[in-house]
Amino acid sequence: MTTQPTEYDGPLIPMPELTLPALRQAVAAVAPSRLPELFEDMQKAFVQAGEEGSVVPIQMFYRQWGVVVAIERHPEVARRLHAAERAMASEDPQVRARAIREAGEIVRAAHREVEGG
Image (cartoon, rainbow, N blue to C red; front, side, top):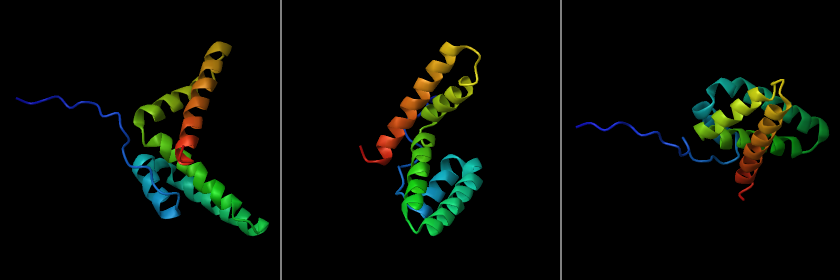
């Protein structure tokens, strides 16, 4: 007797530390098509940090990509966010409003996760 696989709704990977090696590995696992974007954002953050003489752009880069991973490591959450992003282009103002609320809730929850709350 074989059992049908059940859909797993937990995270694909644990939440990584907010370091470049950990985030790079996590993005490669949950959103590999976004690796070029990660490297482009990293380069911009390091250039900006050098120009400003501040580590804040680097810290913001780590948090931004921590949020991406916090969302993408949960396939159902990522699916909902991407659907909401597409719905924001709707001509129906009610559809757009619902999509904005949904996306906002998902992103705020991911920020809380990254911040440890």
